[in-house]
Length: 308
Image 1 (cartoon, rainbow, N blue to C red):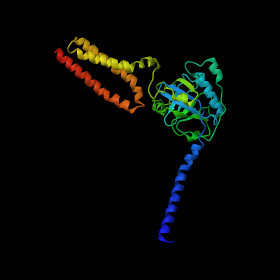
Image 2: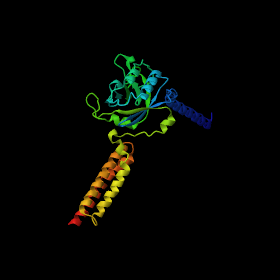
Image 3: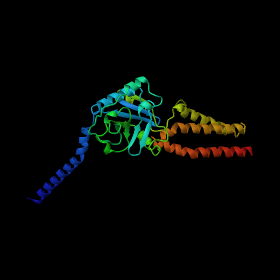
Image 4: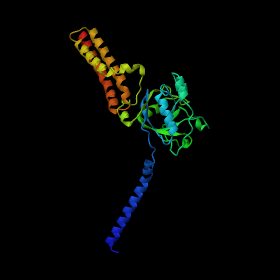
């Protein structure tokens, strides 16, 4: 065999080996992608006081769980349920809806019943939805379930996997960082404000989902006016404070300064929750702090010189 033919044969052999190695490396991933469970058309949107999360369900893997959870969500059973357990790198677990506040109605309680276990070969990984049950009673699951914060192979085959977190990973990250006590109970109340069933991906795409942040229902109506109202207050305050150096009494300048302070407070309340999901918002908020104090110092020093 000539040298040229030997080089060509060696090249073909190396190319074949490279293709085989690449196929072997991609084989499990491709197989896992092919065997991925079918998702139901419906989605459950958990609107929490830490942001919104979208849950996708596995109707073929856990049909009874899917059916009951969609029914209970439509009835408002999960509205007001709190996360009573947040264990780092393990689970964020919703409490039993029977004991939520406000208490469930008689109709809601009647709709809750134990679910027979629907075990599968699906693994417990981050974002997995897993139904809780009493120890040694796999058929006792009802409403309490966990969103996995990390891989938990010791749960495989022992708890029903019925879905996955489809979006809202930033919200789950924020919940995972919550301060907890020795029993893994959050120091602040983390709860589901409202659970909604969305019947199609198209309807879901049209929804306004909140990013990770801290939301207080008591201030919701105020927050809607804060961005534009804060800017208007800031403009009026700066204008009034600036004019006080020439045309109006110093007392009105102090009132203008107070308006500016209130405006910045309102803007911070409105935009701080968005900083968890937007790095640019976080940077702008950080930069605005020294700018605000510099502005206050400039106006105040100028006003004091004028008074002197």
